[in-house]
Structures are given as C-alpha cells and as structure tokens.
Image (tube, rainbow, N blue to C red; front, side, top):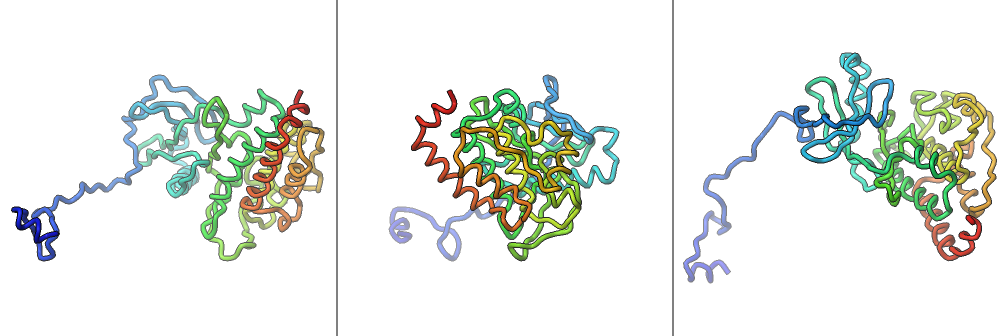
Length: 321
C-alpha cells in the first residue's frame, strides 16, 4: 500500500513509514485533578435547598448550564479535621464508582472553602418521599425498584474492592425522574471501601453507623460485620415498599433498632405479594449473616419473581383493586 501511495505522489515520514508530526504538541498539563471544579462556575442564583445534614446542606444549583446537586460543607465546619477527612473520603470513593444505578459524581471543590461535592441532579426526589406519597407499591413496581437497588449494590459489593454502603435507606435511594422508572443509590458519606481477601471476611468497623430504623443487628450491637449489613437494610426497604410504612413505624428509630437487635422482625400485613417475595425479605433480614444471600443471588430471585408477576398480571391487578 505504501509503495502504491508513493507512485501517486504520497509522502512518508519516519523509519517505519508511519505518518507523524515532525514536532508533536504535548497535551496541556495541570496540577489540578481533572474533577476539580472552579467554584466560580457554580451558579447558586436560583439555588434550592433539597436536603440538610449535621455537616452541611444539599442544594440544587447549576454548573455550565446543567442542573446539579451540591453537597456544601457548613463554613463553620470547614476547618474541622474530621469533617474534612470524611469529605475527602467520600470524594475519593465516588471517583472510583461508575454504574447506571449509582448516582454520578461530577466533581468537587477541594482547594477553596466552602468544600463542595457535585453530583448529577435527579428530578424524581428520593424513595422516602415517594413512599410517603404513594404508600404500599404495586408488586410489579416494587420488584422493579428492588432490581434497580440490587443492581447498584451488586456493583458496590463486587470483590476484591468491596464498598459497604452502611446507610442504605429510602432517603438515599433517588428516583431519576418523576416517572419513577429508574432508581440510583446515593450518599456515600458513611460508606467503607475494603479489600476482601475472602468472601466471608468480617471486619471490626464502627458500631451504630447508619440509620437506626434500617440498621442490621450486628451493627447496633457493635459486633464485627461485613457487607451483609447492606443486605439487611435492603430487606427493610423491601418491607417498606410492600407495606407502605417504615418497619416498626410505631417505635422511635433507636427503640426499633434495639427491638430488631433482640430478634424481632416487623409483621407482614400486605396480601398483594408472592410468598417468594416475602421469603426473600425474610432471608435478607436473617439474624444469621451467613443465611443472607448476596446481591447477585438476590437479583436472580427478583428476576424470577418479576417473570411470575408478569405472567399473572391480571391476577395481581385484581389484588390492587
């Protein structure tokens, strides 16, 4: 081919005959991380507070014309060593995560104050508010929601670098849009990344980490735990989707966690779900962590339940009337 091109006036450069620029232009280099955001580019003129916490607030704002969610650390805590450490931990974790069912990290402000973490803005709100408005979900909807959560969590639990969420609850499950046809797992402020040497490793981590109402017994009791704590929290979320109310809603969160740690589980009242769905919940919230299935196993079970519901759609429609 090269000889043919030469015959027609083509020119080659280099010993190998490959074409290249005689003087290559090096790419622009910067000391900044490519995800570092210039705070002047963040537009807060029409900002709306969409969440508050003990360390800061979450606002809907704009960045280069794109709606975003900004977690902004309170100015009074900008010099707190532990707050800064936790903030940087969350940024370093989010940089590594890429999945359709995980909230997308866009960048962060780490070189100036206030410190800010920027993620995509999801218009559908969170699962907590959705359940508060809708109550108990139809079986097909609940299973689709469960599948989205489980997909995101299966990605996080993938070995060897396992991410334990440690605060899985409806407020941290976000709906992409008002149609509620796609969910993403968010808020990794309490997440822990560990390098799993063996599938059944357990770790000494901080006890009573997360939200009491969805907390696994072993966390409440300050015992060693592993990624199965997320499976337990997932079961409590499934229960809430099934029943329309949070587990042990008549108890204060701490008392509910203590009651669960003593071996109690919330009762099933809904009749609109398959026994397989309830059996899955019971497995996931088992007091024996070895009986709790992995999220990959959960996904297989949920797919079968979804197929069953689709095949008996008319039957389930009668239940919901």
